[in-house]
Length: 395
Ligand code: FAD
Ligand code: SF4
Image 1 (cartoon, protein in one colour):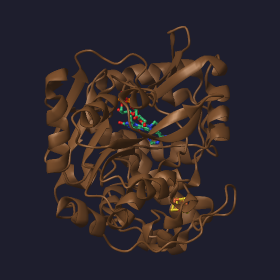
Image 2: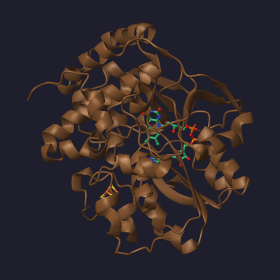
Image 3: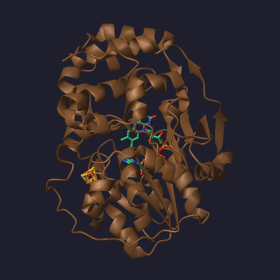
C-alpha cells in the first residue's frame, strides 16, 4: 500500500476546493482531501490514466461503441427473473452486492440508504449484512457523498470491499484507491446525469409532479416521459418535452452540467437502463472483475442482446437550441411529440447515444460559457469527438 498522507477533513458546509463545481462526492469530508487536486473529477480530468490503471488501456475514440460507452468486454440487456420489490428497476445492483457479500468475496459494501426523516436524503453506509444492502435499494436522486467513509474503511482494516457509486465518486475513488490498504476493490457503477441537490430535487418534484410529497421514485424513461411512482403504487407520466425547462434549467448541479462521465467509465461493471429496451436494464461489463461479478448472479437473470434502432442526429441537433432558449411546449404538443418520437425515434443503444449527445452538447456549452479557461483540459477527447458532430450556437 502506498503510504496515505493525511490532511484535515473539511467541515460540513465549508467551501470546497472545486467551489461551485463540487458534486459533494465525499472525498473532502475525509483526510483523503490531501489528494483532492489530483483526485477531484472537476479539478483534474484524467480518464486516460485512470482507464489504463483500471482496465489496462484507455478507450479507443475511433471505435464508436467505445467512444460512447467506454472500455468494455460485453454489453447486454437483462432483468431479474424475480424483481426485488422497491428497487429502482429490477434490483440487479442489490442482488450482485448481496451475493458478493454472502459468497465472502467482500467483507463490506459501500452503499446509500436514506435518513430516517427523508426518503431522498442520502445516508452512506458500510453495509456488512444483506439486510443493510437491501435497505439501500432504490436511487436517492440527489448528490450523495459516497466517499465520506474512506477514513472509516481504512481504520476498519477491511481488505475486500465493494463500492457502489456514480461517475464522479468513482473517478475520485480510483485516484486514491492505492492508498486505501485494500487487497481487492470491486466497483459496481450506475450511469448518472442531471443530478441535483436536495433543494433542487424539491423544486423539480413541485414543478413537475401532481403530488410531490407522495413520490417514492422516478426515472427519465426510454419512452421520453418521466415516470413518477407514488406511495399508492400509481404511476404518473409527464412527457420530457412538456417539462418547464426555463424553470428547471437552474436546478441541475453545476457539477452535473460539466460532467462527461455519464456511463461511469471507471467502474468494473455498470448497471443502468438507457441502452436497453423499455422495462429492461442495461449492463456494461468493462473488465474481468466485472464479468466475474455478473457471473455470480447469472442464473437469476433473463438476458437478451443489446439492439439499436433509429437515427438520433436530427433530434439531437433540434434539441440544442430548444434547450438553450428554454422552450416549453404546451402539454398536448409535448404528449404528441413524445408519442411520435417513441414510435419512430431512437431505441436501445441509439437511445443511449441520443441521451449522451444531448447531454454532452449541453454540458460542453455550459463549460464553454462559464469556465472557458477549463474547456480544453476538462473536456475529455471522447466527448470532444461526440460534440463535434453537431452545430453549436454561437454566443
Ligand atoms: P437497486 O437494486 O435499487 O440499487 C440502487 C443502488 O444505487 C443502491 O445500492 C444504492 O446504494 C445506490 N444509490 C442510490 N442513490 C445513489 C446516489 N445518489 N449516488 C450513488 N449511488 C446511489 N441509468 C441510466 O441508464 N441513465 C441515467 O440517466 C441514470 N441516471 C441515474 C442517476 C442517479 C443519481 C442514480 C443513482 C442512478 C442513475 N441511473 C441511470 C441508474 C438507474 O437509475 C438504476 O440505479 C440502475 O439501473 C440500478 O437499478 P437497480 O434496480 O439494479 O438498483
Ligand atoms: Fe472534494 Fe469531491 Fe467536491 Fe471535488 S467533488 S471538491 S473531491 S467533495
